[in-house]
Length: 96
Image 1 (cartoon, rainbow, N blue to C red):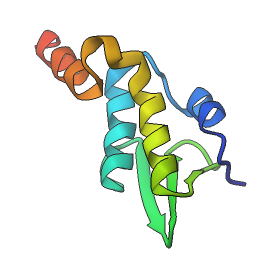
Image 2 (spheres, rainbow, N blue to C red; image 1 turned 120 degrees about the vertical axis):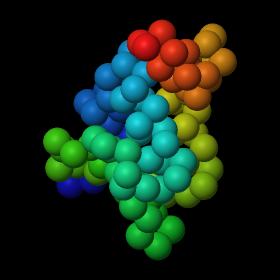
Image 3 (cartoon, rainbow, N blue to C red; image 1 turned 90 degrees about the vertical axis):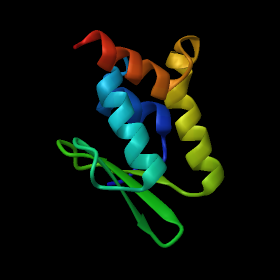
Image 4 (tube, helix red, strand yellow; image 1 turned 180 degrees about the horizontal axis):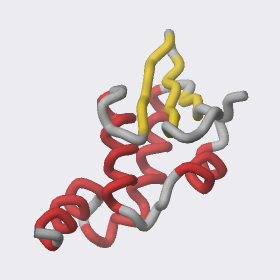
């Protein structure tokens, strides 16, 4: 079974306060790549299938507009830190 419900899928598959995990999902979706464990994004025609390695239910992103909306949802909690990329860079810097 697949879903197009962004908020529910994020709630079930993403630790939204863990910048490393959010960044991995963000990068997988932006680059449509399988290289950002535990997330992968695979294009099949006009659909982008996003999956967490431990879940059977993929998220289907049906258009470029939907992809932008999904990225905006991921980005929202990190806007105060300058966005996901800036928050991730700061987290990496602080953990060394």
